[in-house]
Length: 317
Image 1 (spheres, helix red, strand yellow):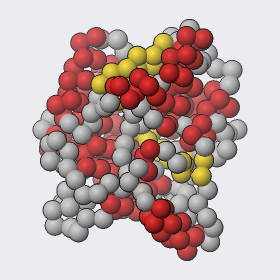
Image 2: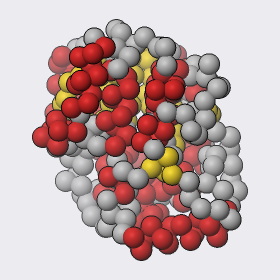
Image 3: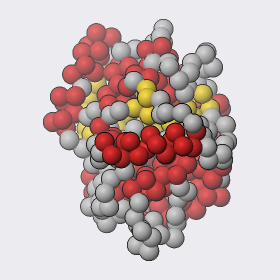
Image 4: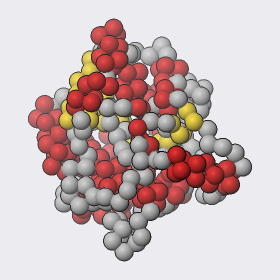
């Protein structure tokens, strides 16, 4: 079942015939795009989904289809506030969930930003690393005990991880000229490395973690990309691969997330990087965007990032 899907598969293709009643799933970033579709497809099969978003008013408007699907299927949907660019907000959100005490079968770390101008989070971290990695690192670790034995962590990364390894000596570009795409690449590599080390730490109780590339999708994630930037990206990709970037629809883009969350076997995806509804192979060839760079799966690098992340957020796990 886990091998019959590909780049053109949609969430409804992947979850066809599945019954997710009784499954409780947390999805971050449910105010637009992939997060909304991920939540919709899961509640449509009866799952109980908690959606986290920075802007609750925006999320309420964006998730009308999710609530309608939940009502029809017998699943449920609830929203909670979470601003990943503020550690105070992250801690408050995690504390609320821990106090509530209800466990999750899956956590899908979907929220993120891309190619932002140089900026900083509320705690002074470079915006992309702070939001895409450190916010999720702190949030997920604080609620790790709520993930049921046999559960999953699914981190959304990107083929953009191929642009750069993490820089543990200069994570905030204090000594390096800022490049929005290098910063994005660092944060997306961090998403993979976080999954690798989280998987190592929790697999003894059957909790498995993976990272994935959803595909290239035109969503609000690209809000900072001008037409000039888009054209430059197309030219760069064409020069490297000889072909144009292929875009996915939002249901196709969210398919790998729900595949990893509910369809694939835990041993199949644990500690791995996935794309197009399958586990990707290691590929260090710069002329292609497919596959995962070897540095993103390096266990020693994953442990080092974990230690650096603990230092940066001021907590140990």
